[in-house]
Structures are given as C-alpha cells and as structure tokens.
Length: 192
Image 1 (cartoon, rainbow, N blue to C red):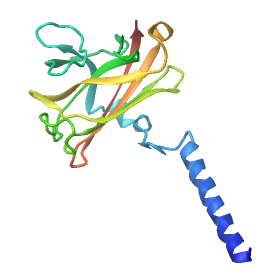
Image 2: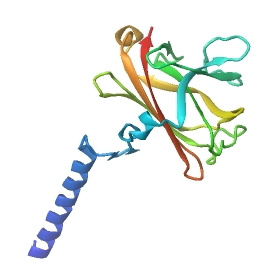
Image 3: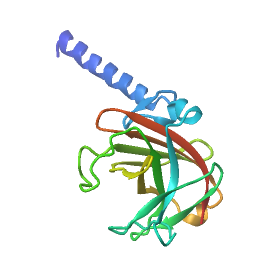
C-alpha cells in the first residue's frame, strides 16, 4: 500500500472518530436522532405548546387508542400525576396530548399524510437520563382557538411498579410542513 492510500485511510478514520465524538458529546445539541429539544431553554422559559394527557369525550375515560375514539386534550399542571397504562402488547406507556396554535394542522383524514406535523417527545428520568423517545406524525384537530393532537403513546422501559412516584420530564417539539416549530416542557409524577 502506497503513502497516498495510507493517508486516505487515516483521514477516513479521523473523520469517523470526529463524527462519533460529536454525536456522543453530552453537551452537543445534535445527535444521531436530530436536534435535542431539551437543549433549547426557550422551551422551558417561553413554551409555545402545552403537554398534557387526553380523555374520551362525553365519558371522561382516559384515551385508549381505539380507532375513531373522540378524544379531547386535558392540561396537566407541573408536578401533577400522569397514570401509566399497559398496552395490548404488554408495554408500559404514558398517553400524552399536545395543544398549540399557529401551525399547519395537517390532514386528520389521512394519518400517513406527509403534511401532518412531525412530533418528537423525549422523556427524562429525574436524574436527567433519557427514559423514552416518541417520534411520529400526527394531524392536529381544531379545538378553537387551539389545535390539539391526542393519543400520543410514549412507550417506556420498566413496569409501572418500578416507575411509580418518579418525577418525569417531557420535552416536546412539533414542526409543521412549513418548518414552523413549537416546543414545551412538562415535569410530572409517574402514577401506577
């Protein structure tokens, strides 16, 4: 192998190592999944969306994710409990909702429409370590004067008994088809 090939291979190793260092740096605001919503202090000091839960209209029962379930957003105060649910496959989940305004709501008649806003919700343990990540697209429905997306199932590792009583912080980010973004933060208590 000549000097040119060895130099090229060495350069590739240096670039790969530098890329890995950027992705693993805890102070970095970008990792392999994209921008970290918890890195933006505006989400905490000046939130542009509200994180809550949802309930079935007319019954008040918690959202279950059943098709054609008429749901409504329920705001949650900081430090209030949010009950964990066990999904049909045995997964522990928090059922969250988001309320905001000023974005393109997408197409509620087409759940896979690329016009639906992208939603990212990251849950953190009290110690600051990541607990769970939800990413998906969801149309927002009008609940004048706000828009809301409900029934966002954030799956977590662990059983309800292991997580009960723990403070959990949720960071949410929504970006519509025009690139307009909204973000917010909520700290709540995991309830069994």
